[in-house]
Length: 132
Length: 469
Image (cartoon, helix red, strand yellow):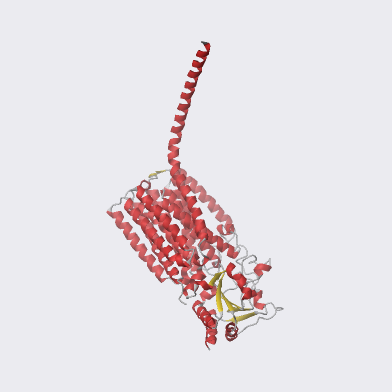
């Protein structure tokens, strides 16, 4: 008899503990939820950023030194992809200041996009194989 | 819609990587450049389609693209290849300024970028924003100074003053403090204070760097423009900007490293700015001829023509002086005539021969020199021993054997072209003045050296005439 009550008591104890644990887990989850949402996109971007750094590192070491000037031309042109942010800014109707800055940024970046790619094309055209 | 634009950005990222990949060989490079253009087109279209703009916004964007695009196109088609470094420096400044403007619009209209509401922007976004802003502003003012120095609008001499590095360090710390205050308060006043301080810092960082060190500076600013773009990418949570910024940043950093190695300077030294405080700036000897030295042997263009005509292998060593004299075309004519005589002609390029990485290769390519004839330092150095003639035109320090032997020389440790191993060395020079580093070149006094005094273009023209006779 006493063994049975012992087991019953232990079971009741265990259920209480399990309940506590579940409560604890729930509150922990509740605490981490907003943080997780705030951190995730940043961690994702950081991961992409670091990977891209490695890709850039290996790709650029493979560029032949003779083409280092065109490399600067191309990187200059693609870094003006900042125009994407500028377009967003110019499109935003919330603030006139944001719009004005966006417009200026679109204009400056466009100078680079067209100038960068075209000057690179001019340079690369000179590196054609010459007819002997 | 968001998924589609993300997908478009992914495609554009891949195209940008392929654009850089194409540059591993001249044959694939043009296709690479096209990949880059397509990627940019996709990115712009996807952004315009995904942002729900009104007519006013649409008109503004199209106007911005048209105005900026035509200015860029005109600049790119008119620029002389000798002025390429100035153009690139000017372009870097624009990326920097654009980063500042995008940061400003994100600050005034955080809703449109989903980073909070005006006056209540997420703390992490403020950190990223101030990074993009500060790096962008440093890139802008630094590039403007680099442009002015390269374009001769400002003296290329290093501008130094007492406690310069301490001032820069203090300003750097102040900048950090302002960033911390800005992140905690989000005040517009602090936003602009950061911008102004970073502008001043960019200016002060580049001012002490001498004109001949510009290859490093231009590459470094290339790198900065990439980091600025990445900073903005983090601020507005844009994958494409982050990827591209990282690619450009890495590329510029590698080029800076290569240029540093070419001049035997440490990368830390460069990142801190302020060359010229050490050995590079002030002329050390520069007195020309020592009295007890053997006199230099001067020759005539006719002598040079005769010797080269009868040589089997001639290596041309061009330096920036050749580009200044606009002699690349006539050098190529000389090489063509020599090739007709059965002479093997190649070109040796030092990493810092021009004013930006790879500049000399572009200048030679423009003069129709086949790229197969043009070789980098490591590749061609062993060949000097078999060469009959080394024709050094407009270069000096990069041939100075003191860099290998004289530990007290300011250029000690710099990799040099081993021209002294050739049977005969011709130096085309205006006079006996020392090179940029201000050191005598003992090669001038060697028995197998012949000096050809005069303007690089004129001397080479006279050799061409002698060869035609």
